Length: 247
Image (tube, rainbow, N blue to C red; front, top):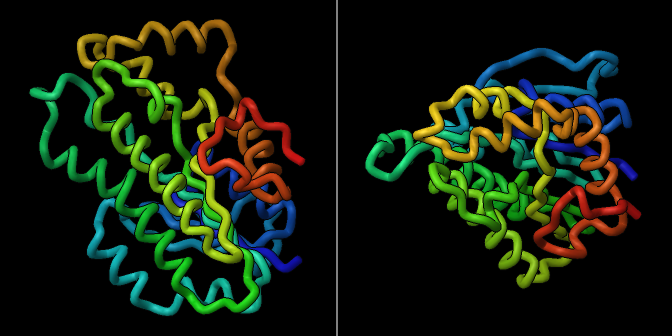
């Protein structure tokens, strides 16, 4: 089956590892991120393209979506994968300490951008084309944590979006808001450095790191892509990768 993918936040961490997994499988992948980083190692000619785009800037995203690049990328493909991976942990801390502009940026990146991309993809012509959307969610969507009100709220929004879209039962469209578990990325490193007054759970994440309990981006990406390509994908609109055995 001819498949292509779009991955946001592809320049580092889990996003970069997902792109690596997709291109290793011969799946042409378009990366959207603030920084252009070049093709992943081993990617064949024509298997990777990228757009340097600040996904917090909704005007810039709107302008890009008004152009032809997304439609051109999926032409002739039988299956299109959208991985909404880009996100931010900030602002952290009690409500009174949060910069309102940082809140707006977080909602733009964590919620508006994936919902806009999902809607744009679903609206494109593609008779008989399969479309699969995965939101990278978090356990924070399902449990509230002190100091993390914005992150919890934005990830919960992705979960509810997936649930509602699944109820639409759009032919050819599957969606899942997927928590990948605790992955050893630069975002995790940042959590271990944050002032405990802003994020009381810091010690929990320090302990996971000390005890070697963080998943590697490569292992997480391999399991995520396997599930995304499987027949089981989308059977549940909200899921946890740690509990999934890909079909």
